[in-house]
Every structure is written in structure tokens, then in C-alpha cells.
Length: 381
Ligand code: UDP
Ligand code: GLC
Image 1 (spheres, rainbow, N blue to C red):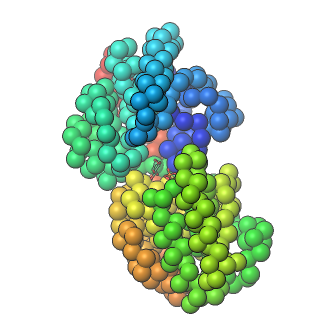
Image 2: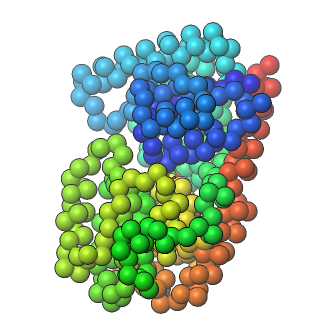
Image 3: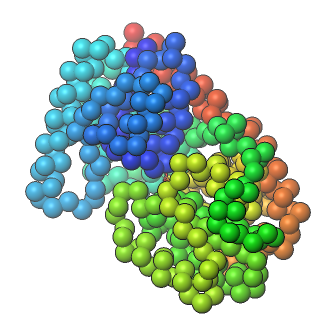
């Protein structure tokens, strides 16, 4: 079957990493993928390197607050993309469309409807969808929610229950493996031996709460002088320069000075995770949190928040700790406990690896996705 995937950006956030992992492994003798993307960028390069065909379309990232002129231009671009992809679907006899985001479903939904093709809409957000909910729901044949939390949010917004399936993201457990040594990264950053390194891996956007991580870190650093803190990632969509500047200022306080490293965006993220003792993800509400399953797959215990997807991914006290969103003291306590109880932390990492192998393998994710395609394409015939 021929599947047209649509993504609204070509930069690499978690949604794009998830799509790429799926595309690396879809059985090519059964699924012939083509990906519709806006102009070239890192996602396009990754796809080309695995010989996946790309069709350029004027897909756009929809923002909540648009001026009148921007809204008008965005509308025109969406219409242009719909026209182009409708012709493409017809000419290439595409069997199914798979929209990888809310923004791309604005195009995929109407195209699928007009061409009579099934549409899978992948929802990876917890933010309420402000407009066109009726159209988005109606034009989706099936809606994939990346967590029960996302499913609940869709139900609260009135999306049809019988269309929603929950499908967790998957991780490559060979690439993210506990056997990998973290020595190179620690050496590169001159981390003294015997240090305890906490890492936060995330886009540099305010809801991920790097500020809270650094606030807890500044107390940890006073009590445990051998603690170090890595901040990994970038402001991928260049939306929050002030936030990034404020984090740099926060990290130069006397308590943290010399102990925080900003690593920027890294392609070889497994080499970075290998250098950590524990991963921290204090987001206000994470829809899923790929970095959790990546770190857990490498045998690292994690600290995340009791909100959104993380409570579905890790079991509290078994694979790491959960804290309440925004609670700096609870975060501090969890980090302190990681340091104070090394054997327990190590055991949680081992259990985390096993849990990911059982529940979050990429093979399981790919098999479920392809079986959904099969079901929908059969139904349409
Ligand atoms: N990532 C990466 N390099 C970085 C920072 C992040 O490759 O420097 C990857 C990370 O490994 C994960 C994804 O980006 O696969 C982030 O996904 P997640 O679901 O954690 O967060 P999102 O960005 O989707 O909110
Ligand atoms: C979104 C979410 C993140 C999720 C990712 C992949 O970007 O922010 O929590 O893991 O999509 O599905």
C-alpha cells in the first residue's frame, strides 16, 4: 500500500523523531512511504539518507496568535498544499494518509475526504485545539493518541471516542543500550571522576521547566558538591530567545557556577545519555516524553512529573520518581534520593530497561501502526 505521511515542519522535535523511527522500520515490501514536508531541513535530510521519497508542500505550523495578514497568508498556503496534495494522491494512487500533527491534519483531513482515502491523524499534544475541531474529527478515519492522557484530552474536547486508539511511541533498544560507555562525553566536558550527573534533554521552551531543574539543582549543588547538571537541546523552533537567555543567567549563580553545561542540540543523543547518572524531565504536562523511554532503555533511572504521559511510562519507585508539576522541593527531594541511594537508583535503571523492552519497543509500535493501516485500507475496498 502507498502511504502519504504529512508533517508541518522539517526541524526535529519529538514528533519528528517518532516519525523517523517509524519510517526507518516500516516493512518496505508492504508499505511504500512518501512524506510531504515544507522546504528542506534536517528531517528531509534524514529521510533522504534512508531513501524515502519527499514531496514538498506548503504545509505550515499553525500558531495560536496570528495577525490578520499572517492568518490570511497561512490560509492561502493551506489551500495551496491541499490542492497540490489532492492531485498527488490521485495521480500516485495513494491508499492512506497519515498526518503527524494537528497542523498537518488541517491539510490531510480535507485531502483524504475529497479523494475518498482513509486518514490516520496522530495527536501528540495536550494543548486544547482552538479551531475547526468538528472538521478535524470528521475527516480523521482513526485518531492515534500517544498516551491515555492525550486520549482523555481529546475526549474532553468532544472528539469521537470510537475513532481514538492509544499507541505509545517506541524506541530502538539496540541504539539505546545500557552497554554503551559514557566516558567520552564526561571526558569532553571534564567531569571529575566520582561526579553524579543529572541531565535534562528537551527543547528549550518554558513548559519543559528548565528553570525548575536549575532551581532544584542550585540546592543540590550546595549539599552535594559532586553533582553536575547537563542541559541538552535547543530552542528548535526559535520561539523563546528570552527563556534561553534567562536560563544561562540562572546557571551562572554562585551555587551553580562551573557545574552546569549547555550541550546544545545533539544528533548522537545516546552518547550523551550514556554519560548521565539520571535523567530529569520536570515538564508542566508532557504529552508523552520520548526522552524518558530513551534514557530508561539505557538503564538510567528517571525523574518526571505526575502529569500527562510520564505516569503511564514509569512506575513510581520502580523506574524512577514522579513529582508534582512545579514543585521545586519535591524535585529536590527526588534528586537527593537518587544520589543518597545509589544501589536503589541503579536497580531502578535496570528495571527501567526491562520495562521499556516489554512495553515501548519500536517493533511493537511499527507492527501496531501497520496493522492499523491494513485494517483501514481493507475497510475502504
Ligand atoms: N533530541 C535529540 N537531541 C537533542 C535533544 C533532543 O536528538 O539535543 C531528541 C530526543 O532524543 C527525543 C526528542 O528529541 O527523541 C525529543 O522528544 P520528546 O518527546 O522528549 O520531547 P518533544 O520535543 O517532542 O516535546
Ligand atoms: C510531542 C510531545 C512529546 C512526545 C512527542 C512524540 O512533541 O511534546 O511529549 O513525546 O510529541 O510523540
